[in-house]
Length: 431
Image 1 (cartoon, rainbow, N blue to C red):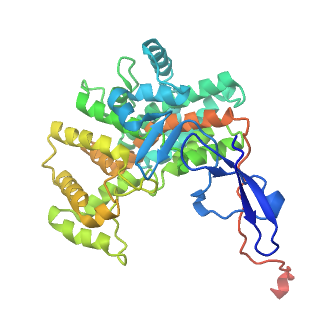
Image 2 (image 1 turned 30 degrees about the vertical axis):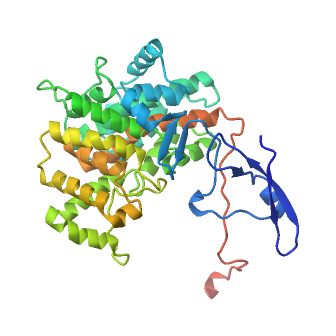
Image 3 (image 1 turned 30 degrees about the horizontal axis):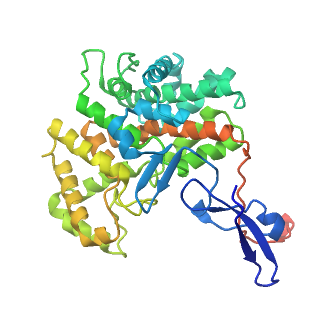
């Protein structure tokens, strides 16, 4: 622990207060204000917690200014180029990349848990057919705690491992079931001979009446989409999982809360918003008009899929996914599709327009993932579901890390109260 401190001075009383400064491996130092209230009688004020470190973690590091994303020290570019999604999952859950035998054992363990309890079929029937797949996923993941209630002691390391693998393994099956249910097709069971992305495509698009052949380019692109969404530090949904876990809630409930947070259009719904924006622009002839609207501060229109809350440089995930997006459009013969021609031209303009360059409003991961998911035939209602499928391993890893932390403590933010004070109740006949 660092011996550095920072001194805060009360301008009214002149009293000084010292607080320790904690140093991470890299990134900004952190002022330890855990004793702030006891010392000063005051709280900090930080809406959105954008200047607050809520936990200590070894999993993921982001440098927004440099456009860097690391998982246990490995760059996202290196991982996406040289690893499968399952290797990255092993890394997030275990802290290091697997060797061949470790990966085989991990995949075997995962494969043995991909099926869901047969009574889940009955549970799905309780939803309306037109229910949003995210609503179904939230409910079905939360319901898993009713099927595996014997293994949800969060302080038992073995039960934590079982629960973590069950959630991670069953999410793609539940997601595919949510999609199949919404379109009225029969559920398709997972196959043990396919890899993660291949199996997900199989469960999504195959039907009992004919054989489904997985396109390797599409499977490879989807595998990259999953890698690029696997974890992203303390974002809204991950923070939600950690907050839920701080109350010692069961892991299925915690992950379900993360999925609910992800559903918001400002978070996981961004790639769905990209397609909605493209449909609003309609044709390439309208691009210049909408570019002008995006530059007009008084106009509510915004270009979705450009820029990022954290990255003040190029989104490293977008750089990786850009090639996959173009490969998928090429192999599926959709480069001439009006919607995708529109997306490609919009991309070209944004990459070369001084307005966007100066403000670093480059296409982000949501822009390219939306193009890929739409090209392979997924409806926009499934975009955030795919995000949840890829992110679950990150949520689970963060949950495990938190439950193993000696500093585990229930989350309890405070507030700056601006309401009325000291009112008296009048008798009902005098109100």
